[in-house]
View 1 (cartoon, rainbow, N blue to C red):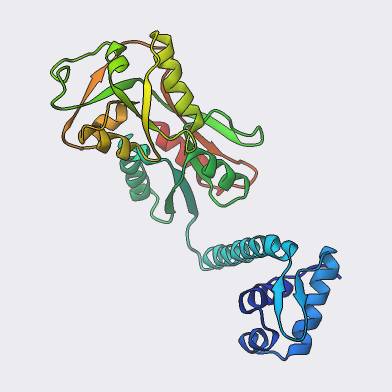
View 2 (view 1 turned 135 degrees about the vertical axis):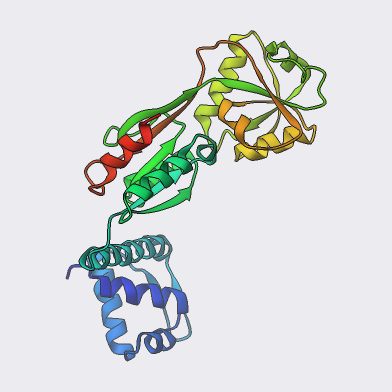
Length: 293
């Protein structure tokens, strides 16, 4: 028997209660139909999901793994039903956009606001995530458009370069070099470096190290954090210096200075990424509007 959403619902409730009586009560059914549906689900999967005896019910390793899958499938089904309802009611399109935090300082909020004023029936929903999280969300159909720092994008996804900007040196405002317009990267040899986390964005991490290597430097990486604003905040507290995208100069954080470091082939790049196989009809129009200066 093929798996049905009814099976998923019953499984999730039983996985939560780990008791057939309580699960059946929540589902407003008797225990025999619940047991039958769980057996049908296990048969369709070819795996035992629960260990049962007269005293207890617990998930097997396969059941633990399937619980996450079942939650996601039910959530996506509910989201799909809601989207269909909204379309049937004559509502406009909804566009789910993933962003890295630094997009807030690259003019994206202002462009989205301007777009919505011209497209009142388009509902835009933002969610923050690092580059790898956004790529995964696009593949799973959980977002419609992402803005990522990585160029490691699956071939099935569409992309366009959205922004390319130089890195600048972020110093505490009281640093001896803070009064200059530009600074030589040689100061990094004597200063601890605050970095964007390797785990959050391996591409950015390697790009900054490559930029230092280009200048013949081997900096001491002292701190790693997951958000650019955290990087700048730590600099303002005197915890070190940092190389950051020039857009961060508009973050409005006091106690720091942003100095030019001169030309380099290593730049901060942001790609707009989407999947044309599963996208809202309005998305191409939105992407073109966001690319305009």
